[in-house]
Image 1: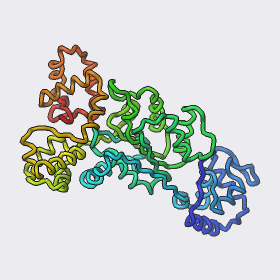
Image 2: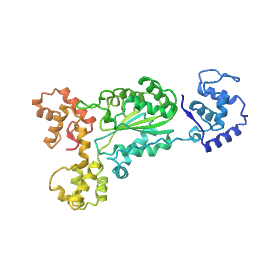
Image 3: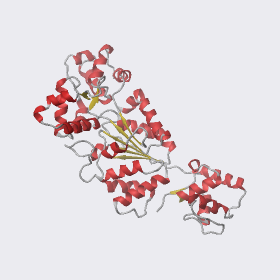
Image 4: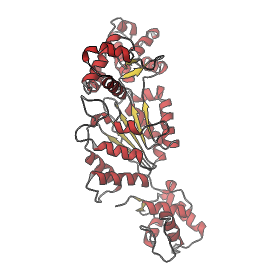
Length: 421
């Protein structure tokens, strides 16, 4: 069953006014002829029919009564009338924000303080550059989910549908596609094969302008291997995202995660319709707003605290609560113990650490032990006994970068340091 649309009450009034201004009677077949030319411009159409599939006198009259008709016919009829179908259609609000309980409560602060530049960039990518696939990447606690929520709420009036899909419970590709397709094809037969489901889904994205958020890509990725590979049973997600990124359509899918997948890495580029936004820590100014809001005192000591936690908003919220509870809001008293307290964020970081391969663990260990950035030669010297080849070392460094666990440091581009020691 093809997607259907119908006019809103206000849209129906626009339709009636536009029809009267045209001066054509309801039964005049010029409506059907003009719509057919729009729906299938490569064919010759004549008054008296037959007309394009989905375009008939009964369809036209249902459209005028505000009843559901096929999406292609709906858009063609609107164009014939000289109406923008987006201002006529009855919108469906299918934005279901399934926030992770563990992350709720942090994001409103972080986005309000210091994520305006990221939101500006994402808005440009979606609305001006017409990106089809965007990945929001960063280590645990950076506020990726919250940024995606704010983006969806900002842009929902620009799309016919806004859809939120959580990947945290690792749904199968079949289950995921069936639920997505049911939004367009409720009660209708859905293709049986994964390839058929993906093809139908892409067709739906071409017919309607949709913003879809897939939150938590890392749940689908394999553990104890280099980043970017899907786990057993989830490999066909690569095909889904590859099709979304490489097929021409006017929709946009936003994926959040702690690691980049290989098909996104291959497709992304500065002028490509596939882009990646890497979320770093908060600026010092924004991070201080969090500490001030939590009631901490001794502002001169805050810079060291922010640097120690690399501006991670969730970590700062957690440690500031501990400082308030145990150290009477005094950051200097906490810093005297020269420790990194992670509290509730430990579980998030442990999950990310447990996904690492053996070579990645060894690399991170050496970077942490050194206490300062290392270049390739420095890492090779420290890992002589491990007998890793240069290609293995480079692949592992790329993987750690895809996981947002290392960062480059100036002025030497090759110098690397752990993102959160």
